[in-house]
Image (tube, rainbow, N blue to C red):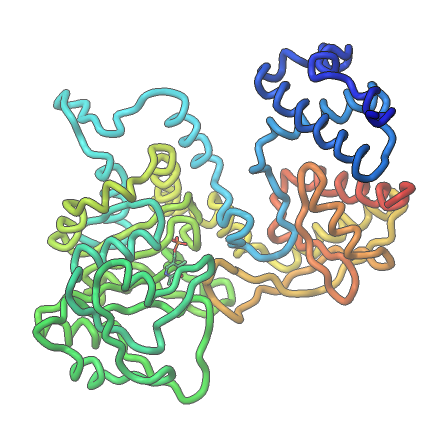
Amino acid sequence: MPHPELRKLPSVDRLLQQSAVAAARAQFSHDLAVAVARDLLDGTRAAIIDQGQPCPAPDELAQTLLARLHAAVQPTLQPVINASGVIIHTNLGRAPLSQEAQAAMLLAGEGYSNLEYDLAAGRRGSRYLHAVDLLRRLTGAEDALVVNNNAGAVLLCLMALAHGRQVVISRGQMVEIGGGFRIPDVLLASGALLVEVGATNRTHLADYQAAIGPQTAALLRVHSSNFRQIGFTAEVSLAELVALGRQHGLPVIDDLGSGALLDTARFGLAHEPHIQESVQAGAALVTFSGDKLLGGPQAGLIVGRAAEIARLRQHPLTRALRVDKTTLAALAATLGHYLAGQAEQQIPIWRMIAAREEALADRAAGWAARLTAAGLAARVQPAASTVGGGALPGETLPTCLLALPGLPADRMAARLRTGRPAVVARIVDDALCFDPRTVLPEQEDLLLAAILAAHRGLAEPGQ
Ligand SMILES: *Cc1c(COP(=O)(O)O)cnc(C)c1O
C-alpha cells in the first residue's frame, strides 16, 4: 500500500510544467532542469518515506526547484569585500589588480592578439617575450621568463638545472609556504637531490663549502618569507653564496617568494628583499610571485642570467607551466606602473600599504557616522593591519577599525560572509571589526549596505 503522501508527489514533467518553473525555463538547459527536478523529487520522496514528512505543496516544490536551478548556474567564484586588514590575503585571491591591469585583461580576452605572432615579420613569435623587456629594465637582469606561478618557477629552475644532481640548501630555509608548498617536497618532485647543511638556526659558509662535491648542480637560497627567526641565528648572505658558487662554477637560485620592487621600509615596515638586490648580488636565477608584493596577477617570475634562462626556456616543463594571455596582459600593465613611477598611486596593494593612519581613521569615522545615523551602534578603535601573503611576518601597519559592539559577532560575521557581495571581517574582543585599509574606496557603499542588511537579518524570526 503506497504512502498516501507519495501520491501527491508530481512527476518530473508535471513539476517542470508548473507555471513559475515554465516561465523561467528559458534560462536553463532542458537537461539541467530535468536533472535538478529529479534530484529534488528523489529527496522529497525519501523525506516522506524515511521521516514521515508531508509532501510539500506544488507551489513550494516549484520554488525550491527554481532556487536550486539558480544556485546551479551561479558561479562559485564571487567577489568578496576584504575588511580583514590583511592586504595580500591568499584565501581571498591575493592582489586586487589596478584599473589598467583589469582593462588590459579585458582587451586580451575579448579578441585575438599577437600572443605568439611576430607582427613585423609575419611569422610565429613567442609568448615568453612580452614581459621580458619590462622585467629586464626593472630588475637589471639579463633575461626573464614568466610562468604560471612561483611554485612552478622554483620547480622549473630545479628541474632544468639540477635534475638527478644535488642542490645544497640551509636547514633554516627548508620552509613550508601556505597551500602545501614545501621546499623539500618541491626538490623531491624536481628530481634534484637535497643536501641540507647547517643547523635550523645557524648556517655558515663553511657548511655549504663542505657539502659541495662533483654531484652538486646548484646552491639554493629560499627567503623565509612567512616566519622570522630571532635570537642565536646566522645565515650566509647571498653575496657570499654567489662568491662560493663562482669558485665552484655553480649557479645560485634565489627564491624570494614575495620579492618587492619598492622599498617596504619607506612605509614603516621591515625591509623586504628587493628583486634588484638579488640580481645585483649575482644570483643566476631569482624567482618571485606576480600576485604578492608585485601587486599583479598570479604568475611565477624568473629573472637572471641569459644562459640559465635559456636553459629554462628550452625545458619541456615550461610548456606545462605556460602562462595565459590575460595574465601576461595584466602583468605588463602592472610592471608598466613601476616604470612610470606610478606604482604607489596605481597598484591597489601599494595604495593600501601607503595609506596613512589619519586617512584610515577618517574613513572609519565616516562609516561609523553613517551606521549610527541608521540606528546601529558603531565606534572607531585603533588596531594594526598586516601585509600577509607570506611577506613581512610580524610586521604591522597602524590602522583604525570600525567596530560594532553589542552585537553577536559570530552570527553577524556569518551573515556577512554569506551575503552578496560577501564581506570578510574580523573579530576583536568580541566585537565585529572592519579595517578600511583593505576595503577598496568604491566598495564602501556596498559594505555599509551589507552591514545594515546583515543587522536587519539578525532580527528576523528563526535567525
Ligand atoms: C609564496 C612563495 C612561494 C610560492 O609562490 P606561489 O606564487 O604561491 O606559487 C614560493 N616560495 C616562497 C619563498 C614564497 O614566499
